[in-house]
Image 1 (cartoon, rainbow over the protein chains, first blue to last red):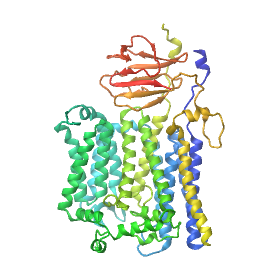
Image 2: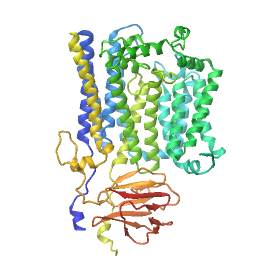
Image 3: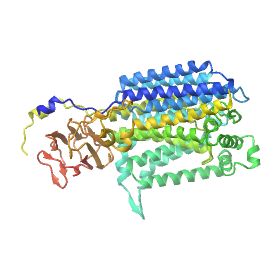
Image 4: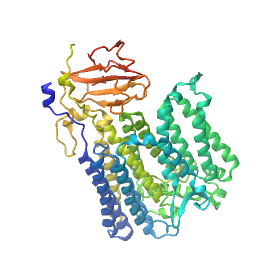
Length: 462
Length: 156
């Protein structure tokens, strides 16, 4: 016993040093990219390089300090990886803004940098206010109602605004936000809390048919409700992306909670059926499917609204990039409409090529891996589901937009997390990262010490 | 700017991007390839990795507690010198939400290089392999301990 008391308890490494080094590297790469854009476009290092670089570096240093103080055991990789993706996004937006081409008036790297700053503030606030992620479990149903309200709020007359055919914005005077971005986080919290309470009945009851376990009919309720809500989003707000995101996340979390394949099969069947029906009934959904199946057709290419011109130009852009890309500042990504928001992935593909895109996807994959790892290491079921759900949400979001831009699945208007220009999405994703950091801190910190030293008082015989 | 310079910058940028990815994988390589690679060499590398993070344990001593069955399946907890409690209470090391587990169900603690399992007066009992744990019992490697619906075992 005395030997045990003499040696201090070994703690798992915090890896703060590694985190700071990776963070510096991420900011360094961003500055390198700025310099590259300036050298290629104007022949000199742009004046903004230091502003943007030091701005981003300052924000990230602040985020790091808050993290080191309030979540010291958090995963060392999440913040640097997110920083890199955010930084590359800033550079691409800056590059498109600098081209001063037609249709790029909306691109503003300065705005995006300010939004990144606000995002970091929200990240810090979340970490400081939320000391224990299990507090969210008490807010299960509150989160559910808030999420649902945010989701349908654009439909409220006077508050909602229709932009580019989708009714997914709400406006307060000049400021507009996309409430669905925040809704998805609230809904993941709700799903996690709800499934912890209900998963036993969802996992155990039911009977076996052929090789899958069928759940009882009445347990289908929550699935059907989520299905109806996501179809409602699809039909009323014309937002295919959010609809797919919402339902897919729910099904994935259901699978994590119950480990039953039948839920995944039921979910896929329901969604495909629903989407097919919607495609038959509603024109805008049908147009998406037509374009997806045959984007090269002239009549689709020429169509004014919902045509394939943007998609085809994005595909050509990536094709022009090839394996190594045209180099930053040396391609023509501004030719693709919305290349600074929805199509930022194709802009990146043109200038950095397949090699750069693969590196970027690896970074996303690593973020998701850290999240799933957190989920595995978490000690209570709510944290497990929350971390699993949040990381799946991020992965699913990347899949939907990258799949859409590369024409693997029908194109939906989702943002590329942390890269696309757009305040709401950036802020929401920074909150998501804060939650991931918080859960990873809880999962990695060493178990609490016993209050009394039981080793000294315990007497037993073996 | 000449073409050649730009080409070199472009290649350098891609290389740096991939270097970042590889460095990131390096930071978490203990996760990906198991803890043995980290503890393998006492060399001090330039990166702030901590090869000495794990104590020099004797052979045959368990390093990890792995949940092999039940809702928490896949969870691992690294064993230190700290005792581990299992139960439904929020302050337990391994929190199981299980109607068949008590709030403070069982305890695992190290003694003389061995891990001992002790039932803390649970309602439904703790089982080591097939036998009920009635008094503190040493746990061999790889033998399942059953707490309610959860099954755990010690591994190297």
